[in-house]
Image (cartoon, rainbow, N blue to C red):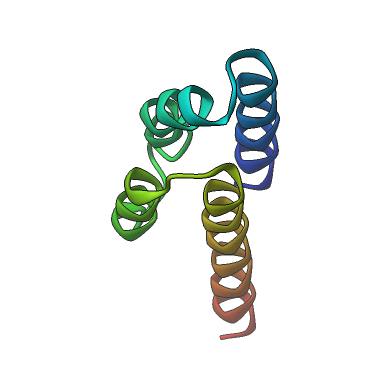
Length: 79
């Protein structure tokens, strides 16, 4: 999951640099669900990404999602 998030954040940054924040964010909303494909329980994350309007919102959603997955993984390993 971490690799996917890192690549998605790089993709986001490059889109914003190339096309500006408004268009870059709109395009990333389409791509972001692809990065999360196959990740269990990604529905809420995808929903939050589709509501994001600025780059920091997308960044926060992706990073929070990554953190939650890591915490869940640790809980499973400890059980």
